[in-house]
Length: 112
Image (cartoon, rainbow, N blue to C red; front, side):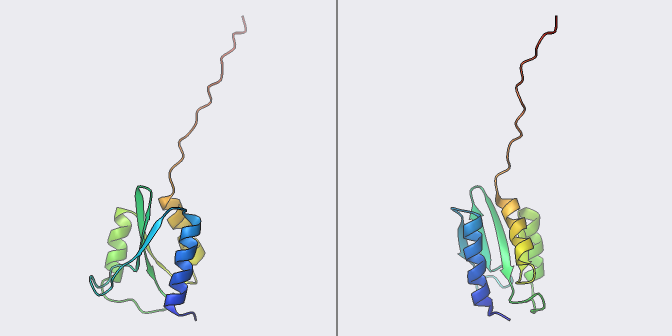
């Protein structure tokens, strides 16, 4: 089982690769107990991740609460080696700009 700090460094590196230009901030657990470890800022959007060294690792009081509340506002989740790919795909989708639908401007041809 990897150390949480090593896994967190891997996660940050992959986030920066998937979302070029993003800013990843590490939150101070001593300031607000239970707030997720990472805040990811990308363009006009944000997400938060609580990093766990495994899916079975214990959760501190209030972590479920903050992840749930922040997910209602934007995107937040627990991330562990077991769900890393899935969660990073969801984060990337949530923070990537939405593409506008292009409507083809075809000329109408008269058959008269």
